[in-house]
Length: 403
Picture 1: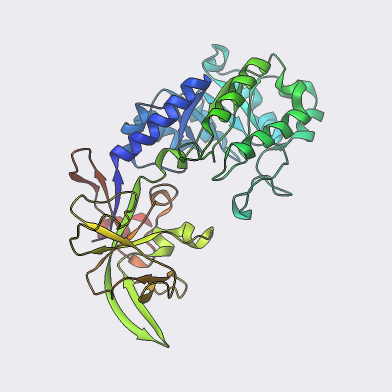
Picture 2 (picture 1 turned 90 degrees about the vertical axis):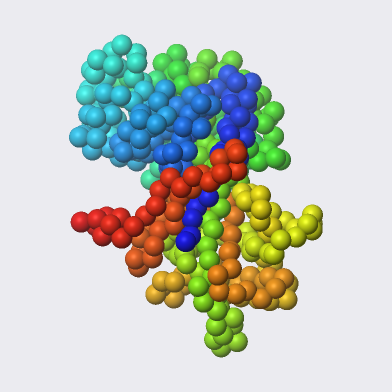
């Protein structure tokens, strides 16, 4: 049976790095639930986080129940019914457009929690400065619907910004400090008077920061945040998603069938790329793949981010690199539901375990029950190397989901 296996020690390793970095900078660090919302694992992150950021009502409710502390919400648009609920428990509510803020300003600013200072409101700003390498994830692309262009924001009537105490800027995706520094510089070039306004009390630098990567320059991030705090008198927030759970989880699958077709060796897995690893097709990208090998003491064998202590793995190569090449495909009827061509040091057999590495972030949150393929279990690898299955999906989950 396929399963997503998440390592608690690895999650805590990332969380400690984020906590130490935020403390050094005097920043607040939030868990981005859009990237990772595995309820049973949120407890391990909440110990280190200042709260969570949500993309709407449901995520905010999940944050309130399982993360607590500070709850920041941003959505490209709110319905009035959703907003009325959020006003009762969120701490920051950031709006995407001046039109939505104008429509709901009176409702927001007259709420008792806003009057007491417990609830603040912000605007997402688009610096119109693109550093993204993937068009699908570029919020600064020409004509983007995400955020108020800086020129529009600085040109609006001051009265329209009454009640706004924060700016939210999210422009990165799997990027380093150099991109953040250049983007902040672009924002400052256009909006320094707004940043320096006494009304602006917080600056949210969004997510997409690869803070927990070994080669990320955390010192440069700390210096940038300290300067922003000193220069503008703002509280700085970071809301990474991937950084909390990168290199913390794998998707374990099994080979169900092997056959030849038109010169290709096909290995059919008990998972779906479209349903269980959608970013592989959407972004797109090629995941690292491993296969289990017989017990060995060969220290040169590579290991995925999460592995069981009694198993050994070998990293798959590109087609033709190693002796045996297979096209790894899914068990759905979608013709393009294919992981790709991978080579292995030995021939594969039905029942072999195939590991897709780094499948915790932006993977489990996007899964579906497409084609009725059984959904992988979700399990935690605990510090004592025991495994606890926290979610087992059944036919009822498939049947009930669509009413």
